[in-house]
Length: 308
Ligand SMILES: [Cu+2]
Image (tube, rainbow, N blue to C red; front, side, top):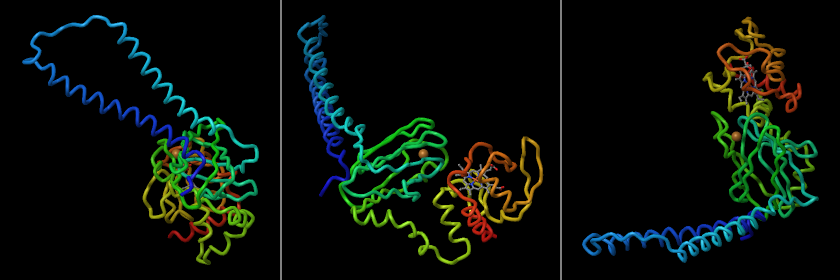
């Protein structure tokens, strides 16, 4: 079976080398220890002997570990170095981590919450963290890279096998860190190209149930990591029965009563820190100005209206 990515071999080799060396020492040291316990027990060896200095031993136990550490470094470096050498023609996908979902933006405007990539083609992920530290991890590809807000990070790979592989956040990033899981779908090149060119695939998947498109937008943007639909409080207020109710918000530190209408919801999504719902924290929800158009929000509102 082909490797899932071009880095599997390098990482696995360095893993096996290190694992081999440490296993040898674990077993060797443990066996020697047990042997010494018997060999030098009090009845066999009643008088302790102090040994002071042995240059030969000092040299040996300096040189051998140094060589072993260099061997580990060599294999580690050989596995790591190509991860930082991106081919110029790599297919670039902007990959955004935020509390608590992943979003993948393609150059032609396609946006997904699952990472779709072609097989046998170099793919580069430009990694962006919008709020706190995250870390993108694809175990099958042997790839992991931290996302640091304000810093440009990347990873790249050539997927070698079609299929679904786990992708998740592996840097604890708050309450719903565990919901930052999705997958990488590797497709044959021609299939991928068809998928990529087709920007209409969304439409037929939507049922005509009221709010269905809104729910889809909400899921894609990870709103439900913080907002429940059943009245329970997660990080943000539940959306159950939200539309049309009255509530108290803090605007510039002053309490005021508002009615939740379309304008309020739009502003809550574009400028979440303008009005803070009483009892909730400021600064947790980020603006979705770049992700959601007013039309998208209208669909979200249609969906909210179904949550009576
Ligand atoms: Cu995270």
